[in-house]
Amino acid sequence: MEFGRHIGKGLWAFGDKALPALYGIGMIFLVQRALPTQEYATLAVILQVFTLISALCTWLAYQPLVKFAAESENKGGYIVGAWTLSAVFYLLISGLLIVFKPYIVPLLDRTGKGNLGPLLSYVPWMFAATWYRSFAVGLLQASYKVVKIFWIDAAYFLGIILWILLARWAHHYSTGEDFLLLNILALLGSSFLAVILTFVDLRGKLRFEKKALGQMWDFGKFAFWGAAFYTLYSQMDVFFVSSFAGILAVAPYSVAKLFTRLFDMLAQVVQMFLIPFSSKASSQENIEKLRATAEKAICFSTLIFLPVFVVMFFFPGPLLHLLYGGKFDSAATTMRVFSFLALIIPWNAVAAAYIVGMGKVKDSFYITIGMVICAFVAYAALTPRLGGVGAASGLVIVFFGVTAYTVHYLNRFVPIRITGVAKRVIDVRLFLERRGKTAG
Image (cartoon, rainbow, N blue to C red; front, top):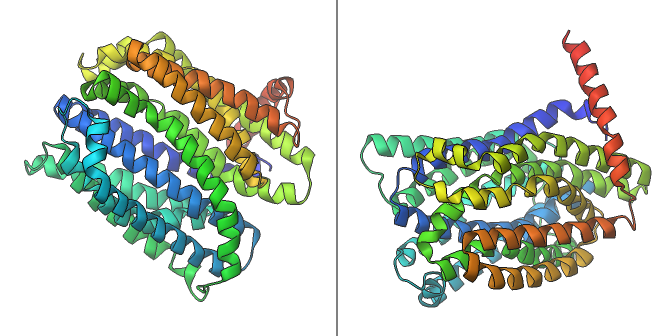
């Protein structure tokens, strides 16, 4: 993969993944600062539940779509298969949430100070609203149609900000419930645009194929369980904070963790390109191409995030005070702990994308099981004693250990070395020089 040849798509991809960052800025001023602390703390838990389940659906239905649609000219069977798997999953989870809500609420809010019960009822409606947009993003990712993905995501991330501004102007925005209603409207708008933008991709291609569905299930079941454990690991820290430190402690913790959206942005950009790329390159057994691209991706990503690490580690207090006016200054230490993810994410994102693209999802599943077990132990040991700082420390420590093992595992197939990554700094310099000459 020649980075220069894909610079246009890369810029659109970064633009697409910058949308959550803009959304995060909107969350600061329109949600975290605007809503009472109790309302925001409860809302943060609900959004974590929604994010957790949506991520699981992506790995069960849409990640197999990305892999097989990228490898095949006949995508119809995989499209219908993705619809089938995602619809069944969302309906099943929605039913479970409704039935077990009386047991879920006290588990997540032992103090009873939140408003989880009524807000949890909105989660199934959010599933319905996001169903088609999530499918469309997966389908378009398989063919690198990044521009269309950008506009679909923009319709949501910018749309929710617009809806909140309109609701505030009309004096109809003061609770977490108001936010969820507006969120559903934004998701529906994004899904409607997705229907328009994918109409040509679907025309004449829809058909049910039992073989395609079987392929997706065989791949997706391991990807799903691997993602289930990974997402549980990355999200259950909030649930531990809510359960052991109290739901009000979720607010400053979520504020600190919000800045890690920048890291998620990078991981998603990497996966957008490297999963279909590694799938094709590995099928051609082009190990040198896989190695060179991996080293470049890790090097470029690390250089991009070094300034982020510096700001989060050395200046968390001034940054939080500037953004929140002193409301969440207590989150500074937690943010400093999270800053170390900036140095780990580049390695993890590339290694994880390669393992999925190369079809090693079964092995990835076993790695993730170990990660969740370690994280559970770390959260259980550190959160009761240190609160949010303990949960953040547990997340970072376990993530570092799992990343080191994942890279070690990947080296069995694609040899990646720290020295090789370091030498790619020269490629960065040459790339910038060529871009400078072109611009001149």
